[in-house]
Structure formats: structure tokens, C-alpha cells
Image (cartoon, rainbow, N blue to C red; front, side, top):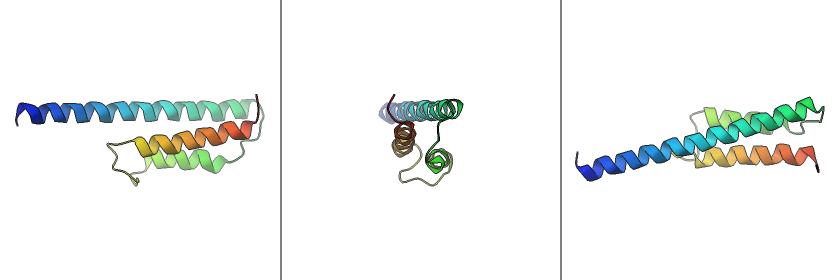
Length: 90
């Protein structure tokens, strides 16, 4: 392989790892939001949104190939927004 190909491969791997890290960080925020809703005794609203987002992240079927986690991040953010909206005003 040429030096350019190696550079391109390294950049692709770094970007894939970075997007995976963002997806995991958003998943952690989603789980924490769900836990805080349960601890506060508030209704969780749409529990299917939480489980659908987690399943979408874990399952291999995606809108985009898995090295690109942008669709997973979007689904997780939508679920997080849904949980926060169900929580109501602070």
C-alpha cells in the first residue's frame, strides 16, 4: 500500500472511532435521563422510544453502513429529546 492509502485508512479509522465514541456518549446520556425520570417517579412517556433507540444502535441493520454512526447518533438524540419532552418543564 502507498503512503496515501495508509493515511486515508488511518483517517477513516479515526473518524469511525470518533463517531462511535459520540454514539456511546449519547447512549449514556439517554440511559441517565431514563434513570432520573424513574427515580423522580415521573412517567416515562414513551418507553418504546428508549428501547427502539438502543436496539437501533446495537442491531446491524442501519440506514447507513456501520462505520458511519451518524444515523445511530440521530436516533439516540431523538429518543433523548423525546424523554426530555415527556419530563415537562424544569
